Length: 117
Image (cartoon, rainbow, N blue to C red; front, side):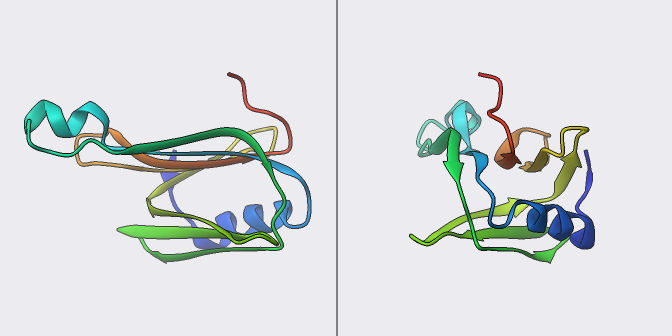
């Protein structure tokens, strides 16, 4: 994974505009929070292989905290805390944010084909 390049990521987001795409969106502090502090509140969300068509896509922010918004006819899908990206040979876009220990906090992925389960 590389540090986010706004132009490259925006170009890849634009590739998906108006076309059905598969979405993976995940947020977690998982066991990280309760492992170190038993009073911490454990939160997370997980969506995988949900088909989405959006008519607008935008990445904004800076190297410490990027946000991506995908606008559909029904509303918005939004992820924040992103810092790295990867585009593979199938043109799948992976965006992620990790904590200082390298543990995943947030990821959003887009693909023209379903993700492996």
